[in-house]
Structures are given as structure tokens and as C-alpha cells.
Length: 137
Image 1 (tube, rainbow, N blue to C red):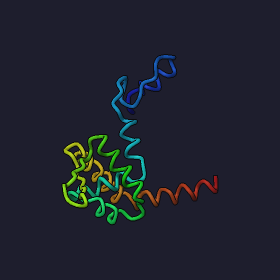
Image 2: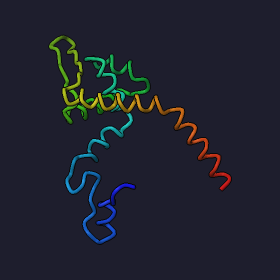
Image 3: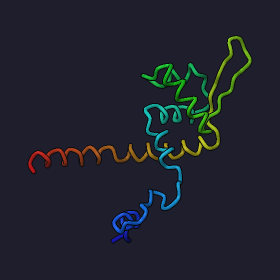
């Protein structure tokens, strides 16, 4: 049996509730906001393969609009996960690449993808069991 959940205990006892990181602001909400959008993970996965020009990213990610790719790359640059390199050509060529921090995130995303792949069947089976039992309960 695990130890007491101090976050729940402090809420029950009328104390200040603790977040997922304890009593500090570890930034998890900001990270989840970024990762929870529809396109960020796909852009990071593609950039983990190497630098990509804007058009290459657009072709590599089915269904992404120019607007969403532009917003996503700007947000990733703002967060320090990617860098935008403008080559002084006519017309200017722009490419994106992961920063060291972005590469460290891509390792985590890769691990999550591996876990998903390994557990896909088990999750599908659990859902089928759940769906079958909900109708009979």
C-alpha cells in the first residue's frame, strides 16, 4: 500500500492544496498546454529526424494547415524548443531545428510513443472489457 496522498490530505484538512509537483510551480501546466495541442508533438517528432524547411514540415504532417504550422512553429520557438533559421536567399528560405531542450523533449515523446505501441493491444482489450461491462452493470 502506498503512503498517504499529501495533496488530498491537505485539501481535506483545510490546508492549502498542493499541485502535482508538491508546493512549487514546476511548470507542468505550461508543458501540458504545449504538448496537448493537436500539432506540437507531430512537429517535434518530425524535427527529431533533423532540420526541416517549412514546406518539408508541411508535407510531412498530413492535415496541418499553413496557419496551424505557422502558429505551432512560433510557439515552439517562443518556448525555446526549436530555432528558426532564415537563409539570406531570394526568396528567403526558412528552416527549423530542435534546440538541445527540444531534443531532450523528443526523447520523452519517443519513449511515450514506444510505450503506446507496446500497450496498444492491451488498451484496446481493456476498453472492450469496460465497454462490455458498462452495458451490463
